[in-house]
Structures are given as C-alpha cells and as structure tokens.
Amino acid sequence: GDSVTQTEGLVTLTEGLPVKLNCTYQTAYSDVAFFWYVQHLNEAPKLLLRSSTDNKRTEHQGFHATLHKSSSSFHLQKSSVQLSDSALYFCAPLSGGSNAKLTFGKGTKLSVKS
Amino acid sequence: DAGVTQTPRHEVAEKGQTIILKCEPVSGHNDLFWYRQTKIQGLELLSYFRSKSLMEDGGAFKDRFKAEMLNSSFSTLKIQPTEPKDSAVYLCASSRDNSDYTFGSGTRLLVI
Image: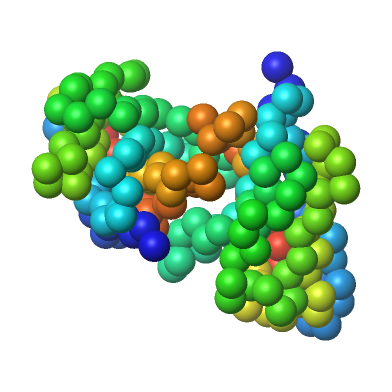
C-alpha cells in the first residue's frame, strides 16, 4: 500500500526564520494528488495546500509546496514563520484509483517561539 | 456551512464498557472516514465508507471496532469492549468524491 514519510517529531524555530517540512511518499499509482493538512491545538485538521500537477508551485497562507513526482516529494516551506504557525502538519498523498483515499503521515509538530 | 459534527466531545469509559461515537458528515458528501489519532501513531484509518457502503474496515481494528452508516447523514463507531490502549482522539471526516476532507473536532476518549 501507499506510505508517506515526514520530517519526524518536533521542529522548533524562532519567529521570522524559514521552515521546510519534508514529505516523501511511495505509491504504486502514477496518478497522485498531494495534500498538506494543518491541525492547531485542540482543533480539527484543516486543508492547507493541495496539488496534482508535477513541478508546479502551490501557495496558500504564506506556505508553498511543489510536487516532484520524479523524487516522490512534496515538501512544505515558508520563508518566515509566525507564532500562529505553531501546529501539527500532516502530509497526505491521494491515490488508489477508484477507491482512492488519503494516506496520512505521522505528522510534524512545528513550534514557533518569539 | 455546517461542517462535520461529532458527539460527544469527551468520553470517559471503564475498561470493558461499550461506547458509541457519533458523526454527522457534511451534507452532500458521499465519503466518510473514521480515524484514530495518537501522538505515537498519528492518524490511523479505522473505516471508510463510500455512499454508505463499507470500503475499508481498518484491518487491525476489526475485532473490537465496528463502524456503521445507516443513512447518508449519520455514522457511528462502536468500540466493544473498550481497553485502556483505546484512549485517543477519534476523528470523523467526510468528502465529496475524495476531494478535500472536512474533519470534525473529534471525540477525546479516555478508558480507565
């Protein structure tokens, strides 16, 4: 089945610094869409970014990611993190043909300090 | 827009009890998912319904976990009997033809 690997554990940064959260995946399917979800403390996960186009940069709320099918990656980046970016970030490929569903990574916790 | 509604928000159960968690998906969504969230394992899929039909039942969770969807606007997750290791947040999500998932706020379960 599909699997996804994210930057493990906790990433701690000072406000204003750049961040890159890694995400790589393995799938038997060539037709893959990719999602990043963000979950703030005691809230539901919410969609942050999605892409199904190879080598195209996708941006939302200051975050960006580019799907690279050649390297099976969809890393999440931001040039300058804010305190409000502190949250749990999940990477998830969508593949599986007619029964496609999201496969979530274990999540990366981002903690931004002043 | 009404999102995904989950009840109860919190549940405390004694080991061996039966508990039922409830979920109302977004109106018009035909996919419904139940996940268990823990710090160690992250989001684990328990069940997946498409148009009320069970598509996946989460393998390792089969023996004590049973999800049902009697109509398109309501689903339940029964855990019977509960064990302390079931303590986690249970999330329900819905989508329309596997587009963006909308998650509920979850049920935080503590089994003592």
